[in-house]
Length: 321
Figure 1 (cartoon, rainbow, N blue to C red):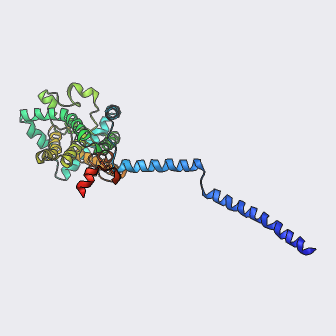
Figure 2 (figure 1 turned 180 degrees about the vertical axis):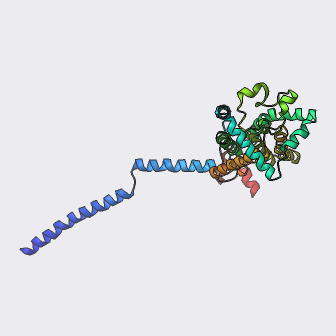
Figure 3 (figure 1 turned 60 degrees about the vertical axis):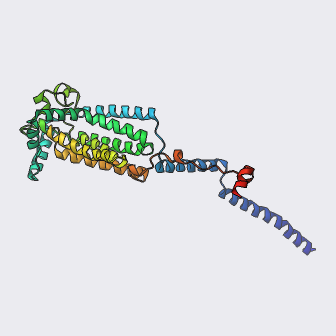
């Protein structure tokens, strides 16, 4: 009597245990395997990460309308912020004196001698006035267009360098107002635009009221011209064009000093800003701007079309035999 009862109890216990065991195992399996929504979220996240990596390795061809709008808005904001910086004349004069005395202490205060020497050659200084006023914009825009058309895979990174450089310069304009040599009290420099009555600077003559005259540190004439020169040097194919890329920022340095618009220390500030711009682009794209592919990989990837062998024309098969 006790044995069947014992067997019944054992038999009854086994299904229950099996059910509990199956339930626990099922719950464990359910916890390990994500549901449809979780899998979809993970797929989207993986797709986004993959797209970001792809964009870093080979940026897509930029959209013309977007780039034009971006450049226009960015330059408008640059001008707005630059000219909205308070013109602290006293502080700007003090900073100018600091730089001038520092350069002279180093034995490298050459700006005044260069300014007076070049000013004695009328045709040369007038040409430099126009150079300072025009090429700063013309060459920069020209190089942007050239890189956009001929090197679309590198354009986004190169543009990032330029934009970061300019953004850092705005910080310098705000926190370190600086009177250019031509406006420095007691400096003895010549304002070549006023002396020769030429239209050659947005900070002198009739245009002075629309430009902040104390936004001299860092020099974006050097920052932008060096950006142009490096782009031309690394991306151009003809040797003489690459040589022009090297000469352009050097000529710009001579011009900004000769016209007394900047100290050479302002040029150093421009180089520092550009260096930071290149480093930021390096962090974003994982390579230097000019090491990216010339064209986006998705455009240059021409995979051969393969078909099953039985689709091949009999004559072609016979020919191979």
